Length: 202
Image (cartoon, rainbow, N blue to C red; front, side):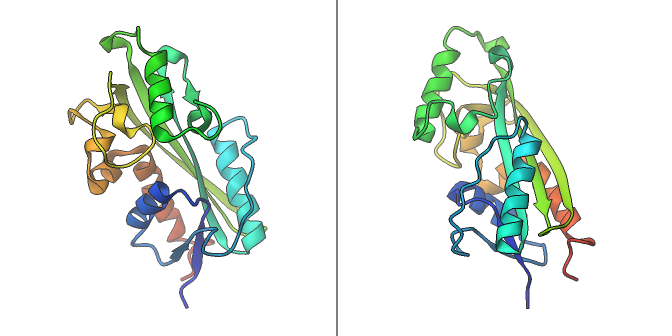
């Protein structure tokens, strides 16, 4: 019987990416919704690392499954690192992806092209119920475009320009995005951790 790995998110965009990124690990990937888990872990940590660890340990303990959680954020240099940990709540509770993008662009309306540098960061935590926790991270650097472009992927992807490709993240296929993204980098490191004790079921 294949062991389950609980992805600590019901975000369809993230789940889609993780199912692609972790397709070669010896686990069945499930979500809280799949397992009937309704717990919402409040992100009260002071860093991406703390929030990822918090979500993974709480859901591992509740589900009695190995759990993988991430916390990620967009850090814009001209805004002193904002939105950072507040990326999802940057435009207020209940805001849509397009609301957040619009708000971010409004904050940057007077910032010239050469000063719009930014990075996406992702930290993944893997937790065993009542046991070990491992962290891994990834980072992708780019710039913030002046207007959204592309309809693929999610979040701030339509305005995150990857200079070496001349495209926003929202113009990349899932495979292209995963090959360079912050989440892709962190997930590849997580996949290696999941292939060895004490996490591997083999």
